[in-house]
Amino acid sequence: MRFPLVSVGGYVRLIGQLGSVQRTMCCYCGNENVASGDYWICFHCESVNRATLLSMKLNDQGLVSTLLEVNRYLLGNEYLNAINEYQKLVARYNEPEMLYNTGLIYMQYSNYQVSLIRYDRKGFMEENSLYREEASALASKAKLILNKASAMCQAKIKENGRNEFIDHTIFMINIKLGRLKSAIVALDSQENHNNEFLVNYEHMVLSAETKDYAATASYATKLLQKGMFSANAFYYIAWALFKTGRSKEALELLSALGKELQGGNVLALAQEIQKATTI
Ligand SMILES: [Zn+2]
Image 1 (tube, rainbow, N blue to C red):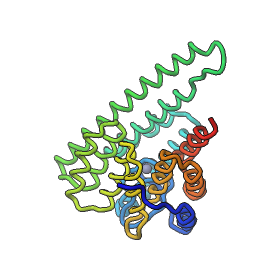
Image 2 (cartoon, rainbow, N blue to C red):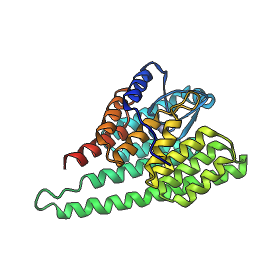
Image 3 (spheres, rainbow, N blue to C red):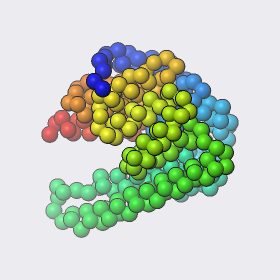
């Protein structure tokens, strides 16, 4: 696959139009999203939100206030409080997407511990090894929970049968676990449902993981079409541009995106690019 023709200026204009699209909250992670169509993929946790279920869930004040509380804690790097709060939702709703999100919070907590490691001052080595140990324990915990989420998906399939949404959750769990072979198996199963949107989306994610950036950008551009739109495609295009040495265009895209959708991932990628280009 060849790297598609990318018009960053055109995409920036398209991103500008997102300002007029209705916003809603992801019912699994509580982050703000652009609501498009009958279902859409969360900008943050990449879970599928279904409009029919979403309105029902967002009427549940307990769910909404707990998600807001969790995100307040996460913003302040209070991970243990965030996890304790989120556990209430896991216990109450028994949904694999919520276990998956618990795994993501542990991953974020682990990354935070890594970010505390410092080499620029003397006498920090002992502290550094504590942060490193803590980060690795948290990463193991994240894996354990993601495995539980995967087992819950299988139990749900036994109970209610297989559909494109549960296959998407299984796909994302395997991506986060770094199990690409299992992710490919989940994508094969996804192909059976004839859901072009989810198939394209998963190919985009998988090719980013396998470092096939021309394919990442190709699948992403397909997801900018009417009726098959995902704002996440802009993020993946930026990722593919950055990885193929086009940092300036990637930053231009991310800066436009960051103005419309607040996402930690956009900021983190922009910082990574800035760091890579200033060294
Ligand atoms: Zn989400």
